[in-house]
Image (tube, rainbow, N blue to C red; front, side, top):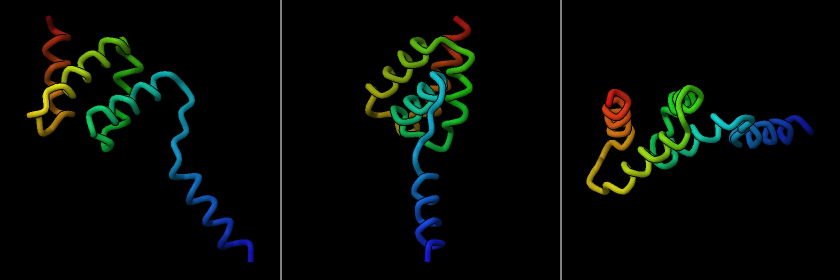
Length: 85
């Protein structure tokens, strides 16, 4: 039967990432750096509206601080602080 094979192929394809634009790629990179895959859509939205280098610079700063437990939250805190200064 072809149906189980087809369903298996669909399941494998759906688990793969489909990146079509730069902001999607940057958003996925941010989520991976910050180990925060639940908020990929948020990072994509930020990458769409803000400077990519600025976002990546903040994310790399957060990654270098090993004592931070919630990197995503700390990233957002730094982003808010740097955005207002």
